[in-house]
Length: 121
Image (cartoon, rainbow, N blue to C red; front, side, top):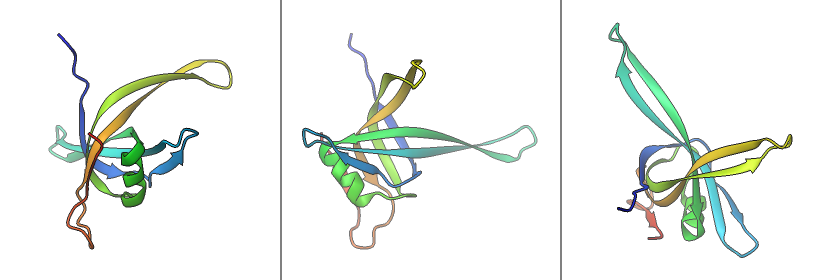
């Protein structure tokens, strides 16, 4: 049986996407996405828990993210988890888990367009 690596999030961007063009011409956009859940504690008070996710978008999706997304944008995002490793300045191996975006839908009300759907599927 094959596995399934699927992530679905609805949240707000923590900052505008940082878009770079790599040597081969491929665009990559990186940004953070906050998801917030609410719950009631033992005393009945509403509490919130915010989780920050590192998002990476490639090629056309990166271009669209750079063009249309900004800090605070509310989006629905689908993607997959990817963990990569690197060595820090002291030579210690570090791991980073990111979400590789496959598609997103802007949930903000756009003034000039009803809704922008972006996908490279």
